[in-house]
Amino acid sequence: QVQLVESGGGLVQAGGSLRLSCAASGTVFSINVMGWYRQAPGKQRELVASITTGGITNYADSVKGRFSISRDNTKNTVYLQMNSLKPDDTAVYYCSLTRVKQYWGQGTQVTVSS
Image 1 (cartoon, rainbow, N blue to C red):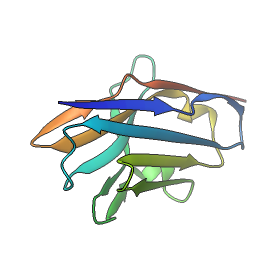
Image 2 (spheres, rainbow, N blue to C red):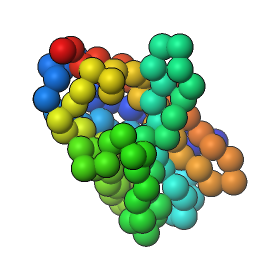
Image 3 (tube, rainbow, N blue to C red):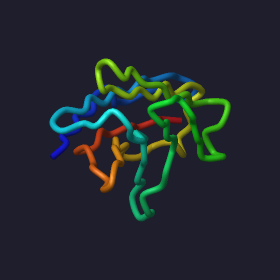
């Protein structure tokens, strides 16, 4: 089993920045994909960004150029640096780890005020 614990959410004004962190524990195999998803009220959960153990990244078009995902494999931790935040970025952000099956964190609220 894998446990994921997110931190770093909060309230920020439009144009501001936040950094999310997610630490994985338990049976974390070295080869996996970690990522961030988000779900706004009334909308489906969507991929924000993902990163492989080797550092290959993938971003949603809506966040390209503003968000940056990174990871520290020695700490089994993934980060999401969010800059130039917009009210449309308001959502619950979930950390995910995928290897054979997909694991989820409990989510952290990000609210961007206009």
